[in-house]
Length: 337
Image 1 (cartoon, rainbow, N blue to C red):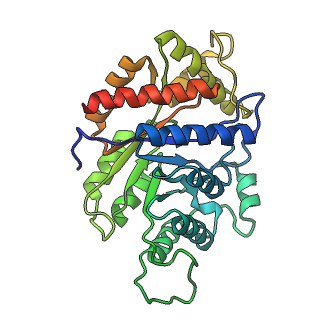
Image 2 (image 1 turned 90 degrees about the horizontal axis):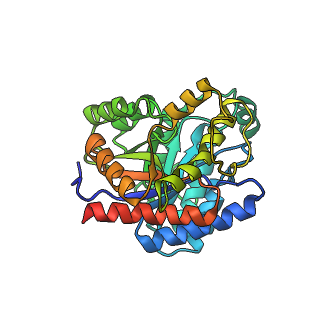
Image 3 (image 1 turned 120 degrees about the horizontal axis):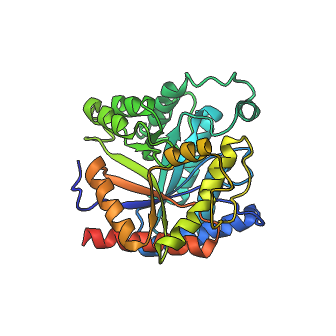
């Protein structure tokens, strides 16, 4: 494992659409955050694929990555992730081969096994399939075979561009399945504890214990994703955090929508069972001032032995969101020092 004294910090962006805003506003906010992330020294910036979600604008993930890459110069950009069951592997290889050709050495391909949507939406995305995800391991191996093809090889079907471009492939997961597959294939692994924390430590243990070195990776490399909402005071951070709490309540009620404005008190907005469920789902969240975030990051790195930390921050006000990520990086840098 890498030296845990030097753990890179990265960004996960769902391109949130706040109430009263639209997708164009979300894209501009993502660009501002990506440009700030580059200046502050974040390691990578990933965008998540979701569909049929009126509060998330990152459905066409590769298109949005291209927009951000064109307006930054050094930041690594990638998918966190592409939900591979929604797509033909060839199309994904071509899309990310195109991105890698345009922005060499800056593109990651993170792959997820979940649809990132409901069953009806999944069928609308890939009508010829029955919603099965049994092909995921073979689809991943097909992508890697194309990316790792030797110069001069000419398979019967090849992604152009994409063949032989050695694009980094990550497996993403919120359960044990992708941890086992990442270990078997010798790939880096990212765990989505920002919304599904229950199996985090079990998945990390399974991944590390069963890891098989590959041509791509000699030793296990695990990234842990959490929520961070940082502000100048604990009270303000708690206030900002109510947006994502409301969003999760709405999801549980089957009524997803734009990211809600923060509120002073959640007690009137959720039932006791909803409160329990949301707090469980969001238990891997650091909410507070810079000092509290610093202590939280230190504990997380110590307890998980993560090789990287990725931070998600669903915050209603774009300026408060920028400030939160800036405070988070300041907290992280004080740890590294």
